[in-house]
Length: 314
Image (cartoon, rainbow, N blue to C red):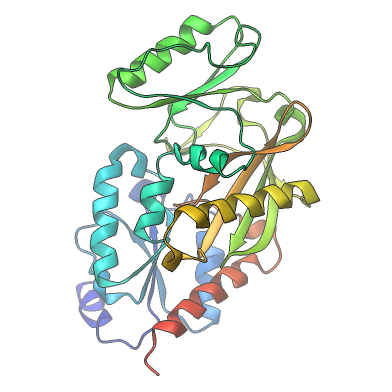
């Protein structure tokens, strides 16, 4: 292994690091097909753990975040790591994207840009813990989660009669110096599920359906993410419009130089009237479900190859 790391900086351009977390090894279903698609293009790609101190990041031509699913517990450490990597290699998605997207208060930017989102109330440390901002708040189930979170960790659904428990969750997050977010539960998701739109290099690639996690209790996998029921989906025209609008809104906030993004995922749920709204915009480490769409792994590998080609001297 030491010899491999030493030689890495002496190789021709084309080395790719697909970055994961130690606890996520073996859990990222995108990893194997993506490694195979890169190998088919003659690219030397390896799976690497983001906080492994032995890794020489400057030996890679391209560093791509894939399953760093434990970042949320150490966000500042993670962002500092990303800064160091970006100084010696090409990181995707880039640091400004990670800094913006790893705090779900980015939803405010989407809403200001006219993108429909699931109504969300953010309650920061020291702010009054109340749910009165939510419409019909005494009749609705709500979801409470941290603004910095991943994989449904520390996220819970509370029934309309469980307001005290929901508020206690908010207060606990605030006491831990974390911002809480509260969203009315969209019951249509129980039958329709979520629609996740996946984009590579700014272009729509495919969509999948995710079953409703909170229709029952979420079952956690490896302490990292909630188990989901995944299947293919043909998005509606309205869903495509909202997904495209979310990416346009992100491009209006993020530096021009980072666009188009190597990968993006827009998670949509139907509101009470059936209209799609953004639940989350995933630009840091989203699963992209390449096994559920023909040639999806090849499309992402091709997008990576294009970036490597741009790095090579003419």
